[in-house]
Length: 452
Image (cartoon, rainbow, N blue to C red; front, side):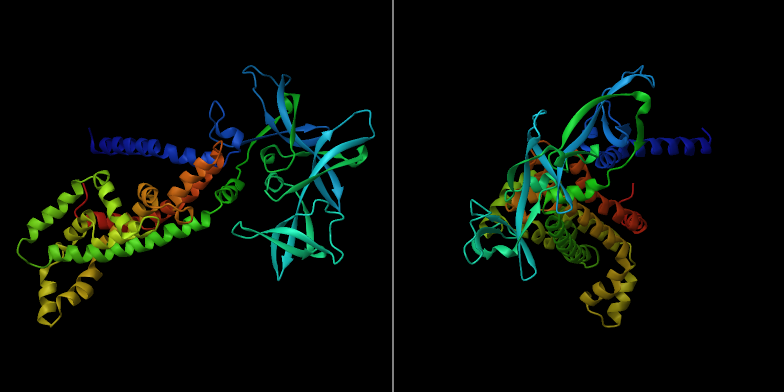
């Protein structure tokens, strides 16, 4: 085969292989941008869709039912529109739940949700009024008894001036379902309760949303691709402690990278640049530890850390990195061996100590190899799931990888769009870091003797 033909064949094989390996990543990103009802739709679709149609003279975002394969523009197809009932209060439209609607009556019975907030010294806390009759239970001094919800979720009873309480109406699904939310049942004139449509892909965010099934000509339905960028903010909100998970992960990455670089470079220097009896034999023993899988030593290590009282802390995840890992020692040793010994001998003649030679002569020449070691350790710590799962017991210490698993397990039904959005946020820094350090990463790999 001509050389150009070989190169073309190699290019095609590598391109196809790259695309195959990218499919899971692309599917994760695609799912992160879909509304929830399209994440598990059959047949699967790559792009997030949005359908709109004109109903009652108003252009609505709707849900599309099953469309026959031979449907024409005149074929009626089922669609679903989302709407909510509401009333006007203080210039604001408040959604309500319709409790009783007698078509012949002049009044309707509705349920309205609200909660109270109390502001003191610039700090606002949600409160729950403990007086059963909120209209008349205030004392003569205008004081009412409330349960104040602190930032950490704790409760405390307190008497506060009624004038400092502010009534907040529940307009979203989360606001209505909060533990401190309350509701009242009202009988109102029919003309005060009006109906309004809401966007189909945002129907789960609004309170008291109902659906209505219609049939519309297929030609009157317009399809467009609309990514749901709000899924990323929604996933952070649903995870609750995303910021804490991120902080724990970054702290671990910093400590493990620091420990690995410091310890492995010193040990590798000793195995490559200093002559001492039995050096190579001990190096082979160190290499042999790479053959021991982690599950074999998992239980003994757990026992050691338990005796030290480290279970439930981050220490088991970063302290061992200050004792040099075999793989990184091997990688740095191979790189150190490529540096001419004449440099060290010249430094010794000038009066440099061994530590000064290591620090001021050898290390500055090893930036590519040290960068590779740091990147390997950063990636390993960022993606580590088994270690945090074994040693961490408190949710406040969780890392991002463990937080994702906790987020999935705490949901009754997995919200795939939020889970994929959170996964994308976790993976994105790794991809960005790789492309930023790609040149130095490849240079370090090729110069340390690990290339194929």
